[in-house]
Figure 1 (tube, rainbow, N blue to C red):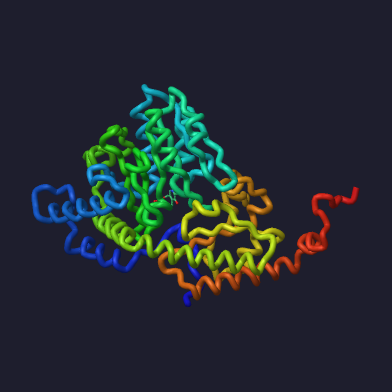
Figure 2: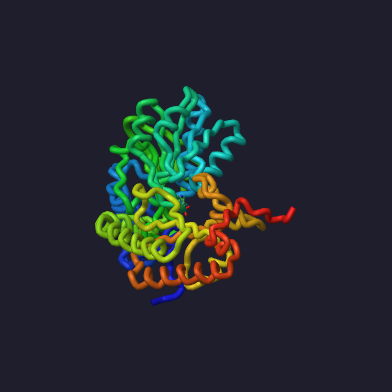
Length: 404
Ligand SMILES: *Cc1c(COP(=O)(O)O)cnc(C)c1O
């Protein structure tokens, strides 16, 4: 067993060996520019790109003509939101999103606010879901775009996309979803879910970093986007720049593999996740699950451990590569805005750990991780006067700490 154990699959994933094998020839022998129309080198590269485009489109129920390759989902989200804002600004200036989106969406929306757009950041319930009703109530005649993530990267909560898509269709508003964490993990279909724009990225599904795609609907309605990157007119003019052929080939292969193994893999990973959670909650008290009990990504487990100090918890389990509920922004240690927005208090948010399980996680690793977490939390609580007082039944809120 290799230490530290990697349990951070929401941050990134290793490249699957099958994906790497598919990519290798495209660095050396098959190195052509997919835009070279005059010779074999170019044609071969173009054929490989088009094959990958079909693979990627197929998994989300789209057609290959609707896929625009980007450098990843940050760019995809920027292109979708900025592209719609610029193209439809005569129609309206209002955008709806949620308060727990990835920064690639939130920061793009903030930038648009600086340019005079109005953005509504919808609240979520304490599981992290956006309701279709709240989307409906927020739509005004000025609304040009709704951008709601498919599944959250911190707490794993899956949104009711079908319902939200139906509301957007009914109101004639474009619907974008950041589907990075959902694609390849749960079934996604742009037709059934009424999605007009969808961002994805290869490196969260065992493909390489630096390549992703944006789905842009071509009919009912035909979505138009203003480009952010100009030059050469690649990707139907929406995203110029020489295509990353090896990356695209790897992305296509990663998607193909995901489609093949998804249902079996998701149940295997979910079983391991449940195992981890069952161990933790049967051996520790005062632990809280963050996220939705059922509408949940299979590989996500986000837990708050009361009466421990977040930093000490992380320090105590260096053998585990996990993420904490505190984000180190500049100098300060701020609790996660996602946890804050689902109502987790600041203290508890600092003690939260995100476990991300994935394709290469084994039961042995989960056992080790459970053991490590349990022993570390016990050790820290043994040193905690607060935990001791709580166990003695003293209501901590009633304690007069300052002695006045
Ligand atoms: C990782 C992630 C992104 C960013 O994708 P990149 O390809 O790394 O730019 C966007 N949204 C979500 C939900 C993510 O998890």
